[in-house]
Length: 396
Picture (tube, rainbow, N blue to C red):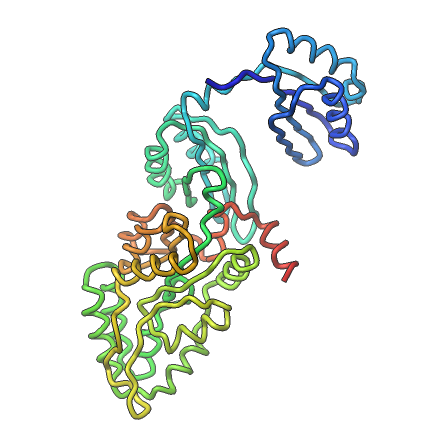
């Protein structure tokens, strides 16, 4: 059972000194403060203080003391006090955070999200605006009994609503995901590196066709990779440096990595691509943890073979676990981001799996999906707002 308390609410036009008047009044009343919430929207203030006052007679006494305070005489300000218990917490248990991301977030989308929450007997307790650009993002704190059903219902509705939605357990648990592991091709990087290499040797169409089927899960990744690499036989090794220099980061990738690092997170790359191209890109971003495949080079040309174990679907998940051990965080406090079928095991193993502009098989399996073209939108799923991103930039 939750302990009954009293919630004092101050509402009206915000101006300097209103908060001080509330705390002065509550100091004179003398009951312990157990929680505080405040929000100001376009100059309108809503300030709430929960105080520990279990006796039935406390409510009327507190109301009398507040009505006699300096705060009650402020023009345009209302002060109320109500008895409060938390029946929602008793009935519904752990809070969930619902993050909504989209190019724009319309009333139609909000109607769909709030209707889904209400249909499961849930209630929205708080709404926070995370960002207006490069996409819009809002975070809802939701009390609901069946979080699994909520996630399922919102994920199904998201595409029709024109937004991306993630559902996670509320609290510090979400901010504790210290290791962020990214796929390289078509996630951190634009396009597929092997397609760029193939374009240099005139076998682009053949390689691209195999790549497309492999990323959709239609072909075994290792077999398809070896087949594609075989088509690169005889290509000058110097071309690897050219492709590394020509390869473009996904929009928002640099902001994502820079913000993670400045806020104390660790970024890593786990890729089915090639170390000779990915390593210099990772170094330019300050990423030290990289797992990828290595092309064999002899006499300055590619042999068409690979060296060492293959980083395939299972290898990506293994790399994520090894990196988590190296960093010293549990696997359930990691985030994995990818787009192809070979990312499925990694996405499934992580605490939060994100499908980024991904194939249907990956979207269906991931905890959440991003369909916007900006990789830094991942930050909003971690509860990091645009203001925090800009503040982190200011510290760099």
